[in-house]
Image (cartoon, rainbow over all chains, first blue to last red; front, side):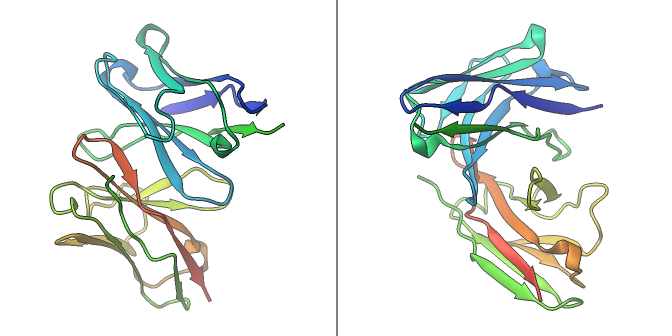
Length: 118
Length: 107
């Protein structure tokens, strides 16, 4: 089955750190770039970060630049998001989402919840 | 930064046609995608590459593009279509950009 499964979310205090993981299965993980997208409670979708197949190209939203670091391990079919200096406004459901293939198809996980609160 | 603009809400009666628009300067050059999101669920693509319907998506969903505006049309709206809809495209760097979302209410 083609799927992405996020993990690592939880409750963290402001200024703290958290590492999210996204495990891929059912497709050639190393052949596709992949994104992190988040959704604050009751809000819309916000793109967070992108990493290309070989990690050569990495992009971040301005709201997380300098605090978040994306990485991937193609041997383990896994994507990571290291989140440091967390703020209350980082509270959200974090999704990993594969880039589109030539047919216009993508894959999204079910998300992992991050809550930043004292 | 690049923005996509959607109406916050659209309301229609069952059986009528709902049209949700999304405007952005780069839309003539970049594909748009439409996502449907129901409460507690991950977003699902209902229209890909401006106007293509993925397998499994009902025929009542269609997409169109004209200049800097793309549109999602749902013909013969059903109660189950009540959801949030997001358009998504890319900026000049190729990174994803989302519209603010439109809440479709079926009266």
